[in-house]
Length: 241
Image: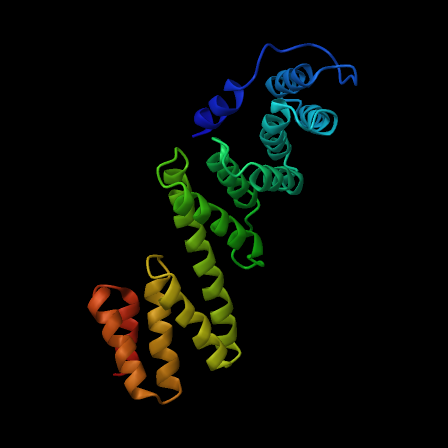
């Protein structure tokens, strides 16, 4: 996928130049300058060159390309907020561009690379999920859809893990209803993640604690039907022993 992304980006470049950033340069020369700086991994300088294309030559064809190249340079420099701003400008003003799928995909990467442990706030993780969902729904036949789907699997696992972390915390505090809400979210929204077995067990556990026998039996039935060999099913059976 990295080769694909780099190929897309570099295919639009013309002959590179060794000039430093110069206000006398044409849009094409500035663009080529930024391209050369990317090849040299001078990410910050490259981003500055592409920004200059946009500022000094906003109506040229190079300004459109510079938005994407500038976003890529910011991304590689780990300046994710700046990258997202560039990508949002591209998406807003060029929705019909041939590279629009790549813009959505790159936006997803900007968030994806900032994902933190499941014990931390997951706002960034949710944004990554939403960005990749746009790629999958809007551009299912693009070169980026498959990778977006693969990354979504990991993202959803991460989001489910965070729900489980919070649910366990509430359970330890004997805040049963809040815990149940978290585990039920996993059962409802993250059924394909590895956390589903424990989430079902926790439902049985909490319903049993609350004396809700029918609800506990229903959750146990789902657990037994789908995961009869799970250790969580065996634990659930002991709750009702």
